Structures are given as C-alpha cells and as structure tokens.
Image (cartoon, rainbow, N blue to C red; front, side, top):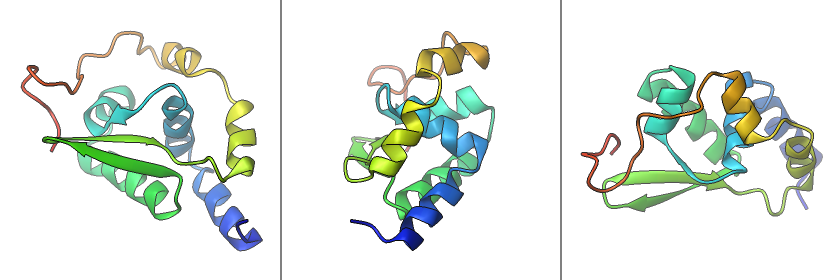
Length: 116
C-alpha cells in the first residue's frame, strides 16, 4: 500500500486539467504522444513533460514498438486513482467536448509515423 505522502503527490499531479484528461483517456486505450499533441494542441515536448511527470509517480507506463512509444494506465495498485477516474466523464464524451471526434495523427506502421 502506498503512503499517504505518495497518494497526496499523485493527486496533486492530477490537479492539472491536461494530465487528468490524459489519464481519463487512457482508460479507453493506449495512446501515443502524437495523438495527445493533436487532442490537446500542445507541443510534443509539452505533452512529453506531462507524461514524464505521470510516469515518475507510477501512474502511466510506456511500451516502445519500433519507433513509436505507447502509453497506458498503471493504476491496478492505486484504488484512490481508480475511484477518481470512475467519477470522470467517459473518454468518448471528453473527446466530444474537446471537438475531437476524429483524430488525424494516428501512430501506426504505414502512416509515416509521427513519434519517436
């Protein structure tokens, strides 16, 4: 079980709207940095900084596949984060609210790639 200090740091990290939304979206599936760049209209270094902070607190994990890096939730042992995410709107609803129903930048082989 995590200490109350670690829980507090994780929750403080999620006080940022972008990071909280990223975690909410990660409930749906894994995402690549380039997709988050498209969704949030933030530079790739800015998105990477958000992800780095969440990885440092153990909320997100990464998996490299070729030149692409995909991120997914890492909250199996974090019931406090699970409870928080259950209270948020569904990922599809969040995307609709952001006007992002169809993403253009999808990282996949044969698309020319957008991340490294």
